[in-house]
Length: 520
Image 1 (tube, helix red, strand yellow):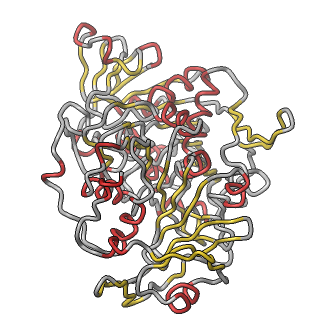
Image 2 (tube, helix red, strand yellow; image 1 turned 45 degrees about the vertical axis):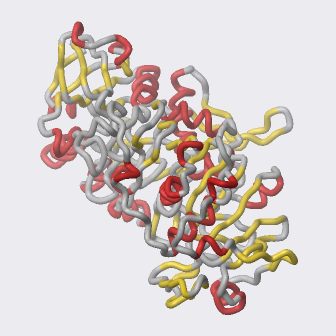
């Protein structure tokens, strides 16, 4: 195990290597070596033609992350990821066929690492069937120059499965807090463990080398054995960050907080600002009616984040177990620049472990956003013309959860509403309709869900839909809403109206607490 400078660590990476990064946004992500690799390429033209892969999005959803390698064309030739973290540069390269790229579910990428660790050909799973990662659609290929088949459709005892092929990794790049002279790595200042251990072990199983970025270097007697998250046998070299503020942030919004690492608890209810009764809170309030006592819940990014705050307002939060795909169980998940972190959490698992739990059907209910929905209730959250987001954990979670609730506004881009005497009034429609005739990529296949008996609904600020074998059905409308003007005219396809059409609970549209706990 070698102590290196970051520049020396970058020398380990050779032309054509496959490089795997750990991380969840900036948590456990070694950004400093990304900059060193880019600077070396600018000076020498090497390393070039790299294959870069990571399971979750690695970056700050703005100007920092793996995508900084894409700023110098030729450095990366293949890009395999679960999420693009709003990287305009990466998306631009994909769209003009300048790099090959696969987008695969986070959980399956984690399991591809695990398959390599176990010496298997790959991971067999039903996750992804009848979505865009199914080879009958695109196999996760994001453009026409991407030719490698990372996913195959196979038959096992008469049932369809997808085979996600195990990767060969030349260099694994991980991050921790403290390393000792034997390479034992702790992660006490990280918001989650992400997939650091899995990346390290898969790299070693490939015969590759593992490089770790750390904040501190200590003697071996300074580390207690229970704190070691990556044993030294999986680490070949490390460098100590030269600028933690810039390169070793706990989350995009925090350098380091002991609260986010789980050492301190906080009474966030005394500090939070109540949510304004806008379209986002209306959706979250209606969603809260779906929550049952003592259920295990996953909340997605965006509007679903507000459900935790509504549940807290209603005095329900202590009777739920909220989880995050970064590996966190319990507590209250955070959003925005702290997405992937939580306060007052019970425990932290690796991403691979949490997705084992998710994909095995452990979640009772999940709340995810939607960007586009077609007449059958199929959902797209990934690709919209030249815009590419990445599927993240959406497919893993939506296909395996017992009860699925999709949350989003009816239209987007300028939607304005108001509440008058308990009625919802649409002041201004959004510029873009979200219920459209055709979607570009299928991230959730509603007919497949109906076939498997999955319980699913779509909640908007003005109505609720339920998918059926024949398509979406309108089952609830908000008080004050006109079905023709406010619903049918805002969709690109005709909609069935339930014979038992109901009005959404009027408490949702009143600023006072709904007192859901009484019936909870």
